[in-house]
Image 1 (tube, rainbow, N blue to C red):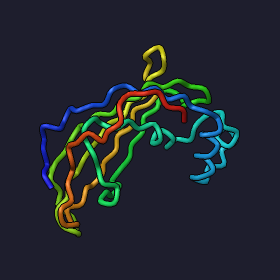
Image 2: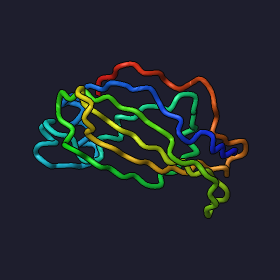
Image 3: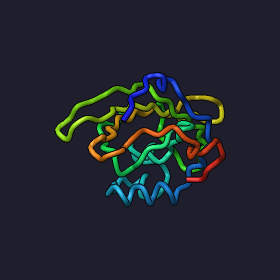
Image 4: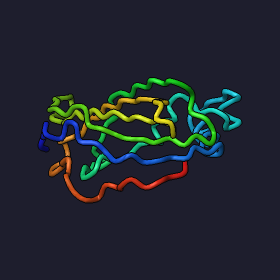
Length: 153
């Protein structure tokens, strides 16, 4: 697998998500969160921002080869029912990594969500390892990434 440091700084287009209470309720149920505001779908659980991801254009990852490394969240305010959030993702680091299963690529991405006024609501950072253990695995540069259309969550 190639580790192309020229990918650092590549970012997605902005994509608008409309946060719905039902989506918050389903997420809370899925993660076992019993906080009343989350169960009612009023405010989102702390890790909800993971569903508000935007693909970085031209980067295609094989989910079967990914290992979750770390996730960090910083909130300026809670995500709420009916929020319209404009989200963007960016590659902040990519480098070779050697683990117990052999060589891999470490990919760090940052995800930002802002409201309609441009105020930041959250920033999250994700670190994943992309295994080279499987013959022929790669971080492909292709045209499968989705482009900036609105989504309802």
